[in-house]
Image (cartoon, rainbow, N blue to C red; front, top):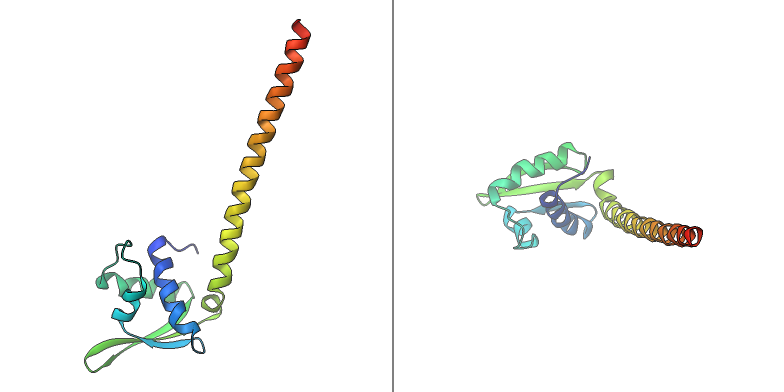
Amino acid sequence: MVINRREKHLMNAIYHFASQQTGQCLITPLEILSKIPYKVKFAESDLAPMIEALAIDGYFEYELATKKGEPVYFISLKEKGSGYEREKKQSKIKLIRRIITTIAFALLSWAVKVIVDAILANAKG
C-alpha cells in the first residue's frame, strides 16, 4: 500500500529510532514529533491514528504503555518496516527512470517532427 507524505515522515522518524537498535524501540510521542520537519503539518493528535494505520499496513507492531504518566510506544519493526529504507530508495530510482524515459520520448518525438518536416519541405520544393 502506498503511504502519504505525512505517513512517510512518521515512518522515517520511527525507522530512525528502531534501526539504531535491533528493530525495536521505546519512544514517546514528543520524540517522534521532534524528528518530523516543522514544514510538515503534524499534530500530536494525528499521531495515534497514523501509527495505527502504519501498523495495519504491516510496517511494525506496537504497544502503547505509560511511563511516569507519559504515553510511550514500544515499536517492533516487521519485515516490511525493516525494508522501508530499501523501498524508499527503489521508489526514488523508479521516479528517476520515469523522468528519464519521459525526456527521452519527448526528444525522440521532436527528432521525428524535425525529420518529417524536412522530408515534407523537400517533397514540396
